[in-house]
Length: 365
Image 1 (cartoon, rainbow, N blue to C red):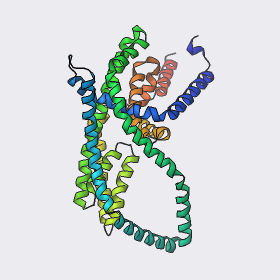
Image 2: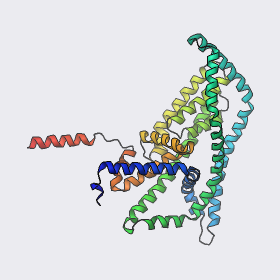
Image 3: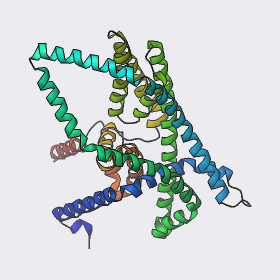
Image 4: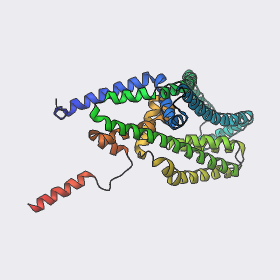
């Protein structure tokens, strides 16, 4: 049956049910698919190192194990840096709690004077918010243990993906007909190159932003500058949302540890300057060239990833969209979707061109 002969409403209904089923499966199997997705990204990123270590007479398991251990050591080093800074931060938590209580009391008095809301009503409002949030404690604990299991599963999955790489590639080639082998090879090559370049670009961007953030906070005299700088660089990988949270954290710490508001203003100005440099110099140079996804799709993808898989979904959304764009660009029927995902903005829309052609045809007649 010719696909074009299918009525639009029937085709739209089939696609909608297919998307609903896909989202349900992805959500139901999130505990398995999230670590597998991170492991796939890590395996693709570490593939050049594995190819370098691989030798004909050496059993395959040894270079795979060495590759995974090197990758895990690098990740463990980052966690150790953050953990050491968090340990220093935890020592000052009691003092910060006293300062925070003082600020809350001052804010309570100010709200009472300006808006006439009594302290009892403010306390009742905060208590109701806390009570409603207590229902999420169980899910938070579950998320913690889920994250822990994910961290333990990622090295195992990465090892298996690298060890069975040839088997998986042969399966992908054999699933499609032989006449499509060229397109399959192009998609696989472009996907590997895009993910490797994207992940490497993100890491370079993260290091640069962490150095700039930490330097700015050290100059301004904000405590825990390195911790806040690194956290800000990690959050910066999330479009718009991460940048806002990255600014709020040092502003809050400056408010709790310093008098006045000059430091907070300096933090906001410094972070805005760093964001400007990142958006116009660093990101286009190291990341945007590798994965050409427009800002609207990036933002929507991050929100959808959060709704589907939470915080891991936010980080996985952009690589997933990049792979989808690569596939769409290689299939004629899906090329309009590839253009929609890309960041190339045409100067005129097709409707204007059609109107001009129609007017020209009328004039010629």
